[in-house]
Amino acid sequence: EPFRDIALTTDTADIVFILSEDGKCRVECYEEENATHSVTIEHDALVVKSNDQRSWYDHIGFHFGSPRITVYLPKAEYNTLSISERTGHVELPKHFSFQHVDISASTGNIHCSASARDAVKIRTSTGNICAEDTSVGSLALSVTTGKVTVSNVTCDGDITVGVSTGKALLNDIACKSVISKGSTGDLSFDHVIATDQFSME
Image (cartoon, rainbow, N blue to C red):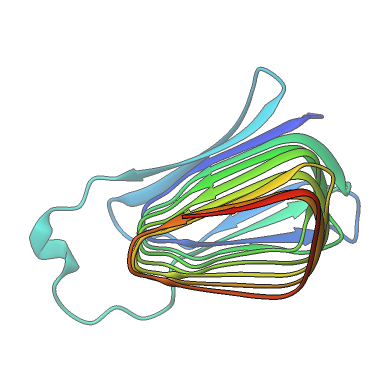
């Protein structure tokens, strides 16, 4: 069925988006016993959810293969992308475009080169965030102890970076304003142009 939105909720699987060569949507999930996924179309949205019913002792032992969800999309433009992740990594290639992107993770790394006509919001605790080679309406990135890298980005609105004890590296950026808040982390700017203001705490 056709869909405009994409929503994924998973625990440990890496998430990768690939443009489908045959024009059909396909979702490939690595699954273990008692750790399956459901893939449905709900209210004009592709919905992927994990159903992890494993006990704590199921995580002990040798496990072969990397948990991974590969989403083959038939077109390059969609409305909303929403991802809720725990420890996996997320990869958004540059040939995809969305109206709005919202990604939250705990310890996973997030790499975003997809464009967004409206806003991109990415939050993680101990993982790293990289946004590069893209254009967005606004960009809001937040980490606790991880690192934020923003490179070669054109932003119509504000770029907001929140870092507690990590690092933020920004280079080759044009935007309206840069707003940064942090505690004990490092902040580095190189070739960053803001037409309105720089605000750093």
